[in-house]
Length: 306
Image: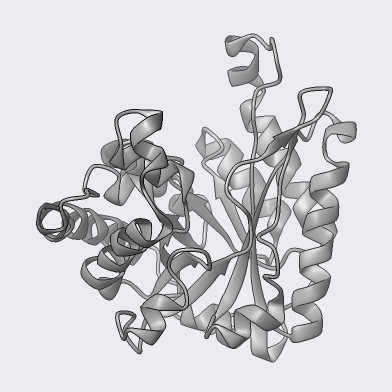
């Protein structure tokens, strides 16, 4: 297992709350947010990067101001939220490296993409506390992962040279024609297997889908050892995610990086309505997640002896 450097450890502290646990608001999506804001593909196409930036600025202003950290993209949100003074001084900033969407090869395997020009040095220049890379993996199909694992390895090496924190995330997916029930049965093993691939590549902090059970969470914790892993929301409803967070934390997770479960029904092109929903709906949800985390504090600095 790769240990954090002093600089990485400091970045990790900054994305955690006073309870020693990761608590980040994820708002680096682009295509997904367009779908939430528009009813048809034609309406989606009319939503500019500037309009997405308005939405993200409101999420930062009204929701992330209550959290230790925000995860944003460098296409619509950064550097805008820094230069316009929207991002508060005490809120850490993770910057997503992955481009929106994916390509598909001749075998139906999903091929992830990087945002052009977004290196570890550029993340530092933009004021980032660290970066986040997301790729798609099928742990049971090694031939599906060569391109995407190369991206992970490239990013890990780049951030190591810059001595900057990097959070590694993966998602998995069903193959063309794959039976839904068979895929659901494989899902826990796919998450556990993808975790192993990321650890073997040298990941030091992980952002993972909920693997489906307490047993799988415990298995991932045992596999990770000293490497902290956080659970993502994957767009499930808030009550479902709250239960997943409880199970994950009870079985060794190190926190949460949550997006759509918090704000997916709060974003709107009507910014007055958006502000109202972020304040009245998303912030209370965040407080509920924070209350779960507070039951599992890790108040010692990472790596300190008991």
